Amino acid sequence: MAKKKTTPTSTSDLKSTSQKNGATLSDLQSNFDLWYRILVLLYDLSNIAMDRAAEARTLCTTDELYISGPYFTPEESVRIKSTVVSAPTLDEVPEFEALALDANEPAKAKEKPTCEKMTIEEAIKSCLQNFFEKRRASGDARPCGPHDMAPIYREVFGVSKDDLRDEKFLSRLRRLGLGQVGEKTVEGASSSSSRKQKKKGGKKG
Image (cartoon, rainbow, N blue to C red; front, top):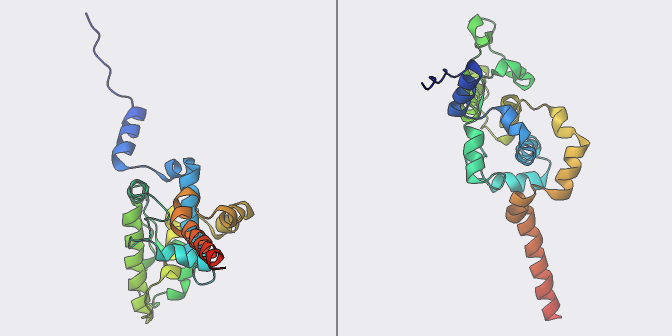
């Protein structure tokens, strides 16, 4: 008589649930090439005002959250957006201390959420909404730009400023840009166009 199959263990259940709910940050970090390009995106958002290459890459994006080409393929963009993270709070981001609400504001503004889980897309949009609310309360009506979004992205992805200042990372960025994905669309496009101009100039000579 055949034995009945045992019910899945708790570990199996967790894996199954994890797969249904999307990947985790650890999954993204285990893909070194993908994680590198995520770091490039965060670097670009943080340095767009000082780095022309960073500005050029962000201008080539087609997604409202910048999670698209030239940084990622369509499949990678979907994977990143659906990755599950703990719900962040702007109170954890030092850059937003300047947007502190009035002292009479209810204490709930400083309360940290429970261990709620949400996708990266949901987390970023949630933080941006809270960011606008805090800015309106502080009387700051400036439009939001990539530089304003950078602290939110660093918090959501669990990346520090020091991570983006790491010399190994910066050396690779200077040497390779985005790599295969980015070189063909941004750095590679500019270099190939300059080669064409040189060839045209050579023919004229």
